[in-house]
Image (cartoon, rainbow, N blue to C red):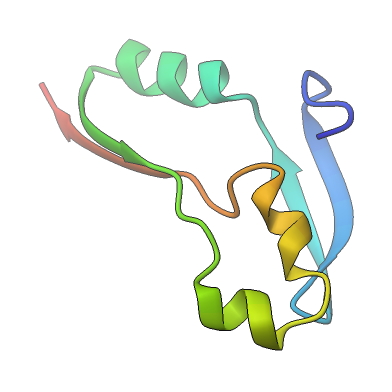
Length: 76
């Protein structure tokens, strides 16, 4: 991933759609949750399914970094 440490607004294409996203580092997400009094219960980084890899052109690029970050947290 290029520019990982540069947080902020980014424009990209995802599944053929133009989208605006706001990039934050993993450390920023975790630190903000912990500082707000949350306890981290689980972290998941899903990958594309075999079907997606076969049927969607360019989906193999999603193997370079997680498509999504899913954090389960509860307020302490």
